Image (cartoon, rainbow, N blue to C red; front, side, top):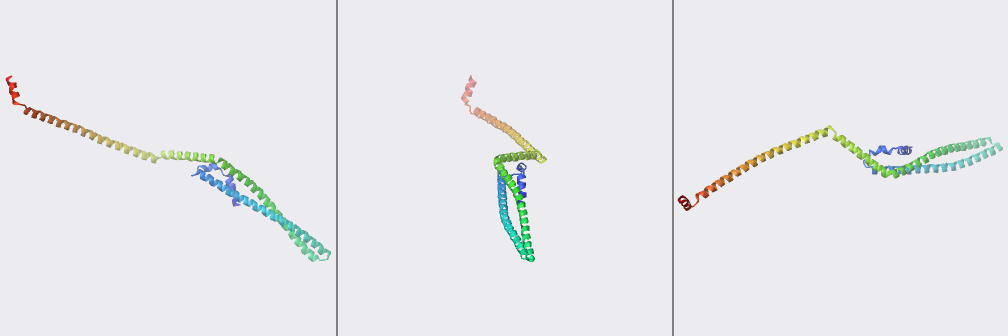
Length: 230
């Protein structure tokens, strides 16, 4: 009973409802096919077992029919010999055989009914396996698509969360602070550059002035006299 209850659940299952729960769609579908084939084997085994039981019961019914006829004949023989006591014993045996036949016949009817349902389930199961195998690639593609949609939805949901917004604002403020500090350092560098240039120019002006003085002090006296005579 457990096998067929499980079989009914598998056959009636809606594959689409489970796609969004699959971490590995291909693996899950392969497992599903394996599960169905395993159930198919068990159903087939159960059917064969019941068919064998029917064969045994039919043989036993034939034996009981022979037993019934034999004891009926003995009952008649006992009556003919004025042995009512033996006739009663024989009729009791005949009645027991008749009851066994009725019981086994009912059992065969029950098994036939079960087999009819099992054959129907077996056919449905075979069709389900063929359907899944035929649609396997398409199902895997759809499963991946569903998984991607779910991932995008969850990502967007997370991106819109207050926690993400808070962290982003903190990061933005940190970047702005770093930019402000960088600008301060740049301004200081620019000022230092200006003063360095001024100091360099002052040094060059001093050196130029000193050079001119040195050159003037070393000018020849003849040239000075010559200039005075003129």
